[in-house]
Length: 199
Image (tube, rainbow, N blue to C red; front, side, top):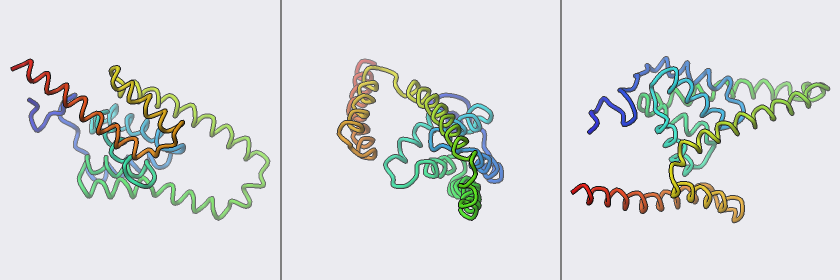
């Protein structure tokens, strides 16, 4: 059994202060262009690899739980993980500092958008940026799926979710909810069998 200071997949987590959380998520907000997948790459690099404050499982859980909520995925994941790191205060600081660079940048772009849109080099630059972002997201999507898909059951759930999304147009929150119900039924049943065998 794990002690209160241990995590299932490693030693006790590094406890970050509020100031450190703010600085880390502010830096992420400065460079997290391209949506949720790029943000997840940054979170894993900063808070799992460089500073063992979170686990990969906690990041996966954050994505799963926040998919059930309305709104943009990035701030929701940041808010959740901020709470995991330092409670309500950590959640508030992480969310605010993550959003602050985007607010400042978008305010500046809104003011100068008309002038910027006339620059002949802008369109090719944006196309190059989008291509790079798609490449980064594709890599992380592969890494994320490789960690989550561990057997035939999880692979089947993945395929069913993709089919429901692209072929039937089912909303993401509903897919996550249904997958959770299926997972509870299948994996709880398997856990019960293991306990019975052990007895």
